Image (cartoon, rainbow, N blue to C red; front, side, top):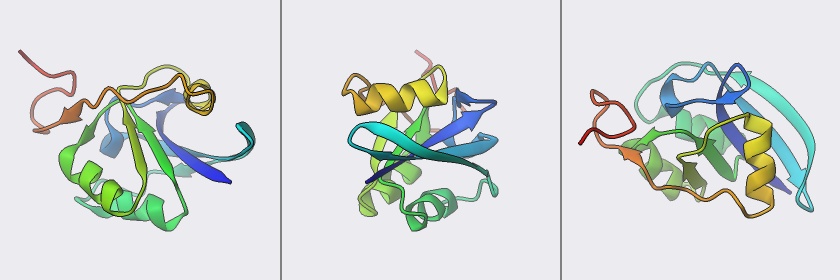
Length: 119
């Protein structure tokens, strides 16, 4: 089984991981979603959310953007990070399961700047 979490705002992939309203957590088997649940974001504190999700057995996190510190903690906890995603949360999970959703690698280096990256 693979457990995939999506940082979500009203069913849509959130632009910024730490500030999303909730996480949709999908249990998958054989590239199919077998169960999903929504967990409210318990609050944005540095280093807290990656461990919160990893402790829930999450194997993959999907988000629009994410800070480097969170990416590092997920990597340490062996959680695959997919950033640069957009659209409906469930659709992004289905795309990941089919192998068509790839991480853009866009990491928010400073939370002051917008996550799209200013030139």
